[in-house]
Image 1: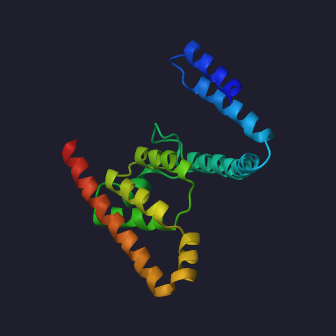
Image 2: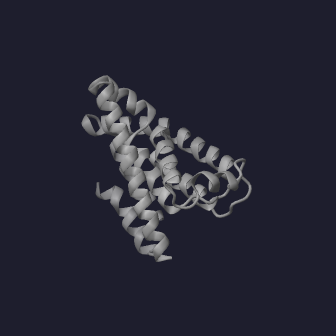
Length: 185
């Protein structure tokens, strides 16, 4: 373990302003140790590596599709979806904009790591702060596969109540947040 930590410590001293360099060295050292060991640690590493191989292409694909549809997060031009559409549906802080964002977030299924770039692209194209929060709140709580699993466990009526509560609470939270952020600007 000390042999794996030593390069990370030396690189941290050599590059104090660049924490990614020693972090990468530490991660590689830890991977070398756990990848070659047997038992629970080796199983954990093999499982984590398997998940990484499954998720990474989806993550890159999601970011690529978001970039094609929305363009660069820093600018409002270049995407296939016109910024006028985004502004018309989720611009400002109306009840309809927050409700639309919450419903879309509830039915979307996107990886946690892609939420921020997608949301940044939407905000860059005219999405309001309130609808952005509504999407972020409803997205992790629900998705279409999630709803199907919940329905199989809890039944249709309870699932509908759960979905409705998540969408309503995300809408109200987005509306309140949008009101407070507009007043702060």
